Amino acid sequence: MKSIFLIVILAGLGWWKPVFPALNTSFKPGEIWLDTDGEHINAHGGGILFHKGKYYWFGEHKTAGKGGNRANVGVSCYSSTDLYNWQNEGIALPVAPENSGSEIEKGCVIERPKVVYNARTKKFVMWFHLELKGQGYNAARTAVAVSDSPAGPYTYLKSHRPNAGVWPINFNPAWKAKTITEKDLKAWGDEWKHEVAEGLFIRRDFEKGQMARDMTVYVDDNGKAYHLHAAEENLTLHISELTDDYLNFTGKWLAVAPAGHNEAPAICKYKDKYYLITSGCTGWDPNAARSFVSESMWGPWQPLGNPAVGQGADLTFESQGTFILPVAGKKDAFIFMADRWRPNNPIDGRYIWLPLVFENGKPVLRWQDEWKLNTFATAKR
Ligand code: DGJ
Image (cartoon, rainbow, N blue to C red; front, side, top):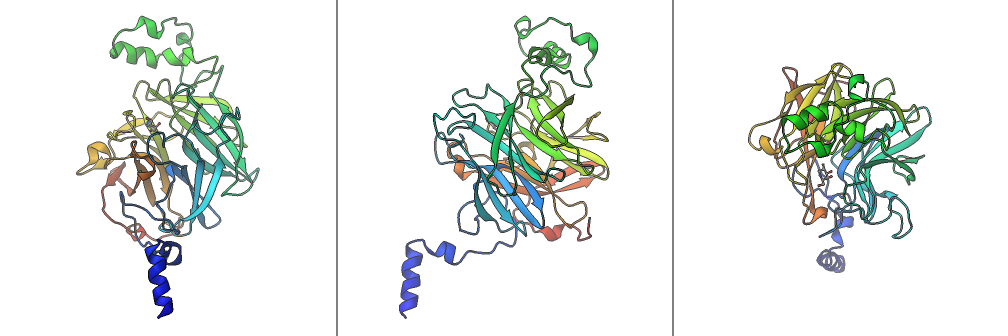
């Protein structure tokens, strides 16, 4: 009797959460996703690393209310063996103290962290979009941190404006000498698109390095890694090769879909082709996703249209993509991970994970209120 009384008291105080964590057995896109401590998972704009039988989910740690999209805490990490139940591993990369002068001091912007494992160096490498404190989104940098263990702690190394002093491999040498600048152009239209395609911003940022905002990192089957990011004032995507240690840029890079306004790149490989899913650029508001296919990372990338179908497809089911996760142990099984942002209360942002399937050579996303991994075939990869 006494113990029942105690349980009732503890439940009343909210202490039941860690005592009786509920086991999740399915994905419920858009609902509150509780971790094993009973707290809503706080890993937005995330990406997942699979290492030695465990998934590690890294994401932006958001806080409540105004200012909650700034990096007040750092990059979170959660781990799971079944993708449904996630244990909070703490802050993998903490922000530096305010006024410390660090590039990642509290109040900067850290977005879309992605972690990859380097089999040669045996290091875990985290890349993320970094905006310096007090500079809005003007810095447009990508930054790298490193760790000896998947959940961290990660040591901050440095930030980059990629590919300073090098032209992309698909750049016509005749465009190098053009002198036209933004000031010479009037309202946005065909003339702008033409000039962007002929290197308007690539020339402007040539010495300083190219802009890098929304990003992801992809490691190919042969161990080569690539950094994909929104550049040129979010107008054009850049794909850049990383050095063998994944800590730097080699200088080989490609401009993709010039003036196409693509953000939120997410990539996967299916039947020897690369598929890229992006969004348009509407701030925290959702828009229609886009998709592209290529036989090589170096293009040509062919547009395939909106991968989302059915009701809600025009706003990607009120979300914006962040990562495509290949499910371990299952052949051709991919999860499209997206964020339903809540800019007025960022900590309340929701996760939209949906099966990504391929139909007639195109990636396809359909809404599901609830789904399980058994939607995929079970054969080994
Ligand atoms: C859209 C991007 O995809 C997000 O990561 C974030 O940068 C917002 N824009 C900021 O408005």
